[in-house]
Image (cartoon, rainbow, N blue to C red):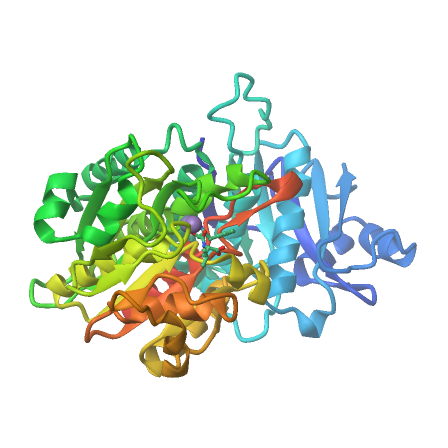
Length: 497
Ligand code: BES
Ligand code: MN
Ligand code: ZN
């Protein structure tokens, strides 16, 4: 069931929704809507703040029932921090907390008065878009594989209450974008969360075909024989050890004229990464079902772009395969020939992501792209370097890197640039082939990116290493849908939306 969003001009004290939410700030400061409730109730809200039951810290909430003078049965007060210092993080934490608090009640519909809060350097459309993305993310549950769909809370409709007709337009436009991004994120999360025995290369291809039907994308699925004909020896060397046939998925979205050169998105689609003959240790190996999150984010981003009808031409490329050990699997020391003609010595079969991406990057050249971005859960070293806060970003053009960093800030799905200097290339030298597929322990994410850069042709190219951001481990284990928000922002800005 999808959450529905709408906008309306509404007075908080007269609003008939099951639940309303208004913002309060540190130092007993009230937002305009909280002040309206305070007046209607004869000072109830201020009294509560004075008693210090709610201090206004970002992400804290209080739920009140049947406030005198207020029509809605439930009122959620949500703290957003210091009134003059509400940034993207405080705003998003506030929205998340408000939506969680509402969800815990029996309310089926709610009206939130939060777009009136001033957020540094962000406008009404931004606030509405982020509200939709954060609310949808908060209510997301993955229970496809559970017999009991335990979570039957009724919250299904969220309205954004604004004070005047003038505010309707930007908020409505922001919500439209937010809905599209949220559905892209949800798609990426669903695909990521599905287990490897269900989400196989074939399953990804089927999902791509479905998406194509739904959003008028041209979808083509290349089979092993096609890949052989194309000379994708590197990609095929990874697929050799698996019983699951590999698929190379090509999706095309034409939102601009025929002449416009496309933006190509490439997503790593390893549906399970056992490491191959260089077998991974057993602990947390289940999490390697998430090794197709790059592919999932490409599908999610294409979905969002198509839903927004962005005036761009886009191509999605997904090399999809398992990485398994077995009698037919590639062995350390094997040498393979990539589609580019370069030979690669496979010193570690667990460095397989780059082996499938390199052929996809060569294939990308066929589309005469204006630029190419690949997205991959590529290196554990990226998690060591940057943790789970931001994705690693590499680019062969600085302007493209800056554009992606800015898109990440806008989407609050941030990235951090790491170097691609030729100095690191030394580490990829092989005694037997044109290059080796690993560069030793130092700067593992950089040498992986350097490897890819040998295949990125002449076009502007960027690489996002999402190993630390694509999913969460531990109690909250699950796919995050990142970097769909970043990529969607990037494309929206390119399409001047
Ligand atoms: N899919 C992994 C990267 C990964 C590992 C992401 C752990 C998130 C958490 C990738 O295919 C891989 O195994 N990389 C190796 C490369 C090494 C053999 C050079 C790694 O990071 O250990
Ligand atoms: Mn691996
Ligand atoms: Zn992998």
